[in-house]
Amino acid sequence: MNKSYEVEYCNLELRFDRRHIQQLIRDLIQDGYSLYWSENETLFIISVRTGRKLTKLRFQRLPKGYKLVGDYVIRDAKLAEWLEKLIGDLRGHAVVKRFKDRQILVENILFGEVIRLVEISGMEHRVIYQKGPVVDTAQMAEMYASESAEQQLAHLQEELDAELERLFEAIQQGDTETTEACKERLRKLRLELLRLEW
Image (tube, rainbow, N blue to C red; front, side):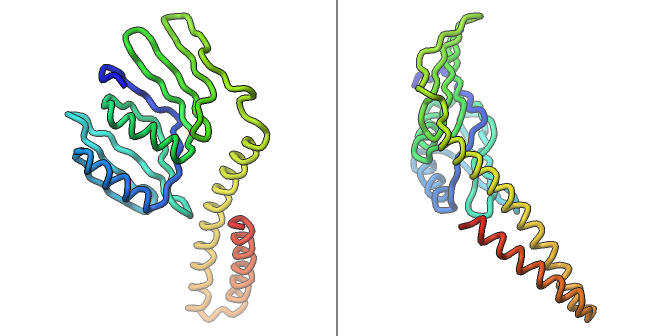
């Protein structure tokens, strides 16, 4: 990749577990990058210094693992190669825009595979590559199910936390009727969680 390139990653989505993030940190340090990281309840952030620029990679915490999300503009060729390798290895999704002189090359990547490649020069654009059917029904169902299940899991986790809080207060106050109602609700939430994780 040419160093004069500017690469923009839009709608980036990569899923990680904690082990992958730790390996990524080790690999970046071994490659000579200066970096630091921070973490809170919702995000794990790795800040990578490339020259005078600081790139913050944001990993959103999920019920099981992490998801690298967001849009990034990378001007460091080696870091761009890292991201592209991760997109391929982890079967991620992204729209990658490469800027050079007066041209933009746009790659649509789905499940780690380039499905469309377009070259834009001024007002003209030319489709260089287009994969057969862009997304087959099985892939669409898989994408929808993973997003839908993820949102449902997050919602159920919130409900579970609220119900546990209600149960704790009911036990503290000696309210047996509310305690039993909370326990029944928690049983139902547990079954729902098991169904989603299955």
